[in-house]
Image 1 (cartoon, one colour):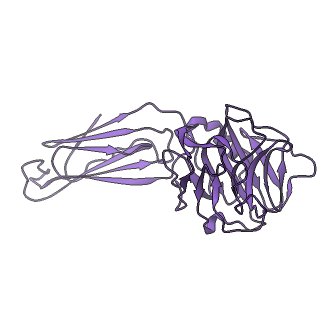
Image 2: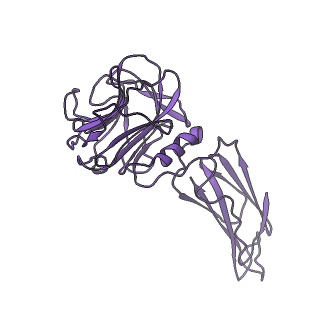
Image 3: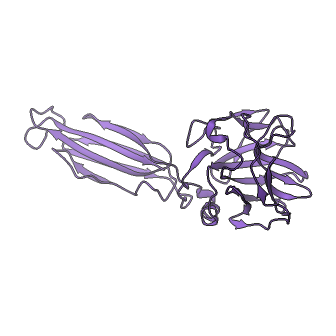
Length: 321
């Protein structure tokens, strides 16, 4: 708890920087008592250190009770019985293997990649079925035909794959059951790579090169790819980037575990107008800054300024990560 004296200008008191270290819920209590201001943040237990979101993100679907895109306008919609369940980071999408049990994201210009364009798809997966063919995510023509621009797949003969109609990488490595596992596929314009829990997986000879598939305007689907056999389990924190992330960046996301990727900064403003107030600060706040300002002139009978002035106006800003 800290006390700020209202007056012509009070010093700025601020907590952690906006790049963030924890995910927490806070309640900011503001109470004016004559010339005093009391600021009391109550903080819930933290899940650990989040990792900064790598640059060049074009879509991020945390699955925390909605299909909203955390970095842009590409919001999705749950279909066919898809829902939410406990995730690796907060909540996750829950799908049942039916190709209609999906999260569908309408096509958008930043989700359409030319065949030579770099790309990264990364996510947390929790597999609950041993079915030998499962599609986790993809942008593919409906009907499970050709036209797959990009997708992540489990295949009985090829293992985990990041592929398209133009090429791809096969690993020969299966996805374990009932374990949260971080997966990432990258394409740098010529070479495909696949990572599990931050570690580069082997590339089956004869794979790993090519291009992305033809660009299409079909939806991005989470839980299937163009209606192909779907994934059974949970998918969390799906992210798409318009470049090939480095191994170090992917490892940092995997190492962050349940703390996840830090949210981008946003500001929420509260104004104190001279009477007791309670401000509820949104989730994932890591800093609260309060300015107490007063103006010269007649007092208002609540919080007189230093020269008989009008009293303090408090501007509180919380920075969300």
